[in-house]
Length: 123
Image (cartoon, rainbow, N blue to C red; front, side, top):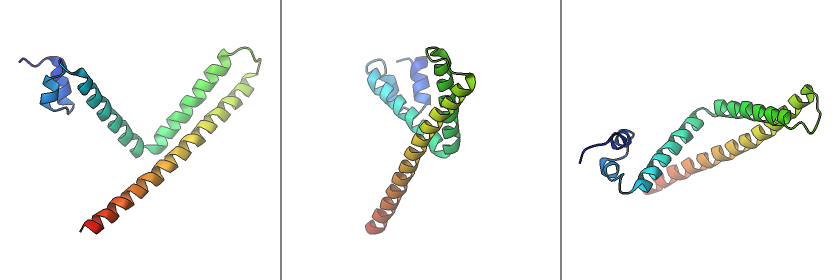
């Protein structure tokens, strides 16, 4: 069987050759593996760059809120009021994300402690 471009790309990103060569028969397995690997890569990047991801989320929320408020012309607010509302929306979202990040950090710390205790007990 000749290796097609798609199979070679999938094999190059870390999916084993057996699954890559069976891609034409079962694409659901390949799609799941690619999505799982992508999600793991995103999670590792976010865990390494926490402040950058939170800052970019804040900036995105600010832009979306400004775009929405300027598009919804039903309320005739001044641009300064729209900017204040956009900042408030972005801050609320950022607080929610920071709370989630704190909970995730606590969970991750507890999980690492449990693994260390299990390793000590096993030895």
